[in-house]
Length: 226
Ligand code: ATP
Ligand code: MG
Image (cartoon, rainbow, N blue to C red):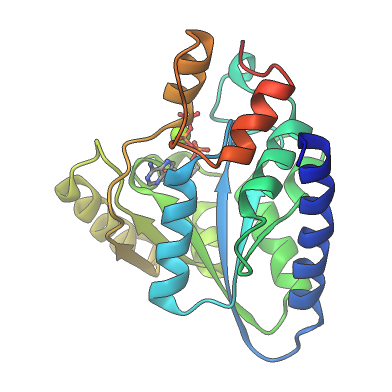
């Protein structure tokens, strides 16, 4: 299948999965995997799947961010491409869907706005917000952090390069300061980052087996990160 057919298929499947979640009225446990996804890779997917499995979540919503306040703009490619790659990457998992609510929003992307929006859409639900250990350690800079903790249960996932001691200390501190509900999960370590992938592409090094094959095809077809 060529890349534009893969994308068309991904869009149709994503719509179906999202509709299914929206029409369900019984109590739901929803995981949110936020990120720039520049590009999405197996570290993101494996983390989301581990959390879904462990906490028996009904769905994981991947949420590509529009204009993230903590990242340098120069490195971030167009949000439409990041959204398309995320849809393609999540296509084969019935529990994964991709949302466009952050890329559609004007201005900076703040998680608090997303959580408020999701709480309105999915009234009868518990929201699990998934963060890798690096993101959790940097969480103090988030807007209205206390409110974030009121609206969601946070799940801190291990990530290579971040010591578990550091993460545990951070979790204890956040629990004390905000009475935050934070869970901690071990994920089989995948030392993959979008930064490293972008560098490999620039140097024309292989990125095979680090991200889904169809995402790799999409990147080459659209000449991204060169
Ligand atoms: P970049 O290098 O551009 O920062 P990234 O690989 O860190 O990209 P992000 O989009 O910044 O990816 O990350 C989104 C979320 O996924 C964050 O919570 C991050 O901690 C988590 N994450 C990313 N890669 C991994 C990984 N290999 N293992 C576990 N968690 C990860
Ligand atoms: Mg990152």
